[in-house]
Length: 176
Image (cartoon, helix red, strand yellow):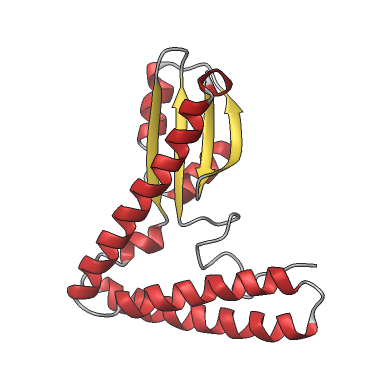
């Protein structure tokens, strides 16, 4: 049985992505909204990021160590190594976030670049098969489709999709 040492506190897996793109379309147009996990946005704030960065780095370190040890004793080595990598990424992001101003600017630039990259991957997939995405709300994480919902678009639904603020809100919207 696979597990996550820190549950879903740390973003970065397909179950708890740190960047998601919601593509929603009618028969004539496509709309894309790419958002980051709330923890990523905390990394942009000068004071708050020192606290959240420390927490993220410590949780990432614990997560990484637990899964590296589990990889030694488990038959699910690949799962544990991917989880350890997730911990390492969060450890690194946490260290960067703790650096006032320079770290905040770096995290903002990193996140903006990653959001643009993953949105481009989602657009490439949708535009390669436009008929397959007509009248759909499709959630992408890291350039992979993770959920799909048939919709009839109205202006209210388009506005509702545009107003989702974080990747977590997008996941919850798709689950509703």
